[in-house]
Image 1: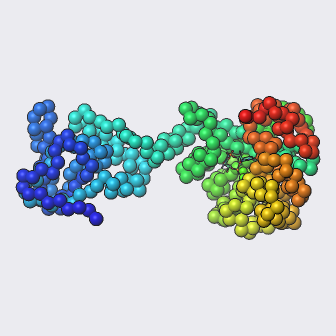
Image 2: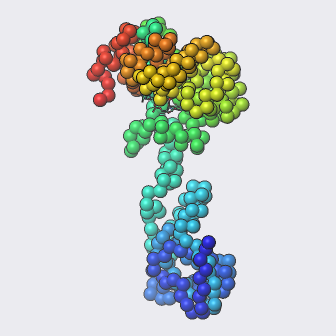
Image 3: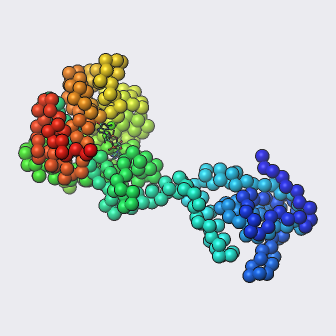
Length: 400
Ligand code: C2E
Ligand code: CA
Ligand code: CA
C-alpha cells in the first residue's frame, strides 16, 4: 500500500543534494521544482496531478538533483525504491538497462555528476553481460570440444567418445557447460553453438581416424538440446557435419534427454528423421527427470545412458543396485545398449559388467580431455585389458 504525503502551500518535499530513495506521484495540487545551477537558483518547472517527482533518486539512489516545494495544498503518493526495484526486476533486462542508462546520462547533463551505472553487483546484468559474450564466443573461436572415452567392457577397447563443450573465456578462464549451457538454452544461442559442436565433433572423429590409423571404427557422440531439435534445418546441419568430415552417419551419435521428446512432437519427428538417415541415438541421463519409458519402444535408441548419479549405487547392495539391474535388463530385452555414466571405481565397473552392462564412461577410464591429450592417451593404449583402467597405466597424465 503506497504512503500518502500531504503538504501545505510552501512546504518542501525534498531539497537538492539530500539523499533520496523515494519518488512521488502527485495526486492533487502542484509542486514547483527548482535547482541551483552555477550558484543561481532557477525554476525548472511546475508539476501537477499524475506527474512524478523525485524519480531520478528512486531509480539510482543518488542525491536529489533539485528541490521540490508544494505551491498549494498537495497530496502525493509515495513510491519506494523497493517497490520500483521489484518492478524493474520483473521488467525485461533490456528495458531495465535502458532506464538506468538514460538516468545516468540525465544526471551527467544536469550537473556533471554521474553515479556508476551499477553500484552493486547485479546478477541480471551479469547474466546479460555473459550472454553477450557467449554470442561472440563461437565467432571468436573461444569454444572448445573436449572428449571423454566411452569404453567397451567386453572387447576392452574405446568404443567411442562423448564430445563435451568448454568455453575458454578471455578473463574467466575455462567455463564449465553447467554454467553456460542453461544460459545458451534460455537465449537460443544453443542453436548456433550446437551446430558448431556437431561440426567440430564430426571433424574430430575424422582427425582421430587419420591420426591413429588403426582401422578401428569408433563413434562420436554429441549432446543435443531440445531447442536445436525444434529449430528448422537440424537434420540438414547434422548431415552437413558428417558429410564435410567424410564420416558415416552411423558413427555419429546424438545424445538427448527424454524430457525433450516428451515436450515436443516436432523434436520427436526430427529424431525419427535423424534415425532414418542413419545417425546413432543415445538417451541421456536415463533415470532422472521423466523416465516415462514411453519412448523406449517408439524410438530405436542405440543405448540408454544411465545417469552418473546412479554410479554410486553400484557400490552397495540396496535398492539402487536392483534398479540398475532392472534398467539393464529392460534395455537389453528391448534391444537397446546401456552406457553406465560416471564410473569412478573398479568395483562400480565390475558390478556393472557382471549384470550384463557393456559400455561405460567415467573418471576411472578418463576425464574429458582436449584433443591433443586424448590422442596421447589413445596412442599409448588402444585396448583396455580387463581390470586395468587406462588411468592406472598412465598415472602421469591425470590432472591432480
Ligand atoms: P552430460 O551429458 O551428462 O555429460 C556428462 C558429464 O558428466 C560431463 O560434465 C562429464 O565431465 C561428467 N563426468 C564424466 N565422468 C564422470 C565421473 O566419473 N564422475 C563425475 N562426477 N562426473 C563425470 P560436463 O562436461 O561438465 O558437462 C555437463 C553437462 O553439460 C553435460 O552433462 C551436458 O548436459 C551439458 N553439455 C556439455 N556439452 C554440451 C553440448 O555440446 N551441448 C549441450 N546441449 N549440452 C552440453
Ligand atoms: Ca551427455
Ligand atoms: Ca548424461
